[in-house]
Image (cartoon, rainbow, N blue to C red; front, side):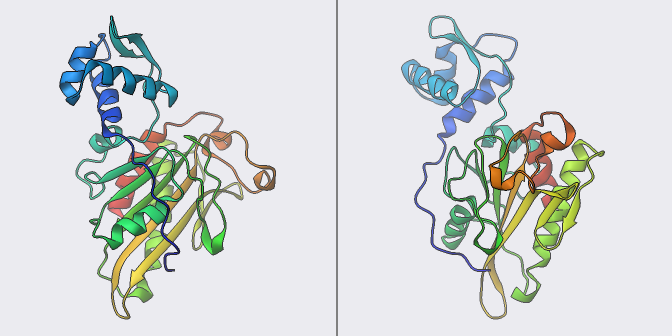
Length: 267
């Protein structure tokens, strides 16, 4: 499958947000002053206040204010590079993680980046897609911060005729990642790109390729996983399921995404 039109430009997440979250996590038992945060991330106290306010609007629970310092009320479940990089160290996916709070399609962003030289192992994640794509031009429902919407860049030395094997590898990686967290979840692979629980779809895979006649230039593997959704649009209610609905418990997207990237690396 070849890429469609490039995605409209999306605003990449300010890396300083993840650094603030990581700093607060590393100092979870104490209040961290605005001055210390400013020194650590190379900015001013007033800018720290603005960034903290931005994190709060994104759902991160941060206590305190400029006069007393800041602390995390709970660990946020955001797929920020600073959250995932330590968990994926040693894999090909730990070095080039790109995060967006909202984007049209992670596959479109990854295809565009790959065309301009993004290295193998580049990861594109978003909290919400506005134009998520599935196979055969289907849309992928991408509720904000409830699923995993992930695309990775690969540069395999394969002829185009063998590239479909990567879709199977991705499906096996999803299955392994889910069962590494809860081995009671019975995941079925429906060739070539769907994963089901109790006959209902919780994950879709979209593989796109740029190739010559005899060799692949690059491949983007997009993976969409329904994680913590408790409702779906009316047209999907009979056919879609999430891990939360299947198990009755809320899942850590950070933990699952890290497990997914490690499983992909093995596959």
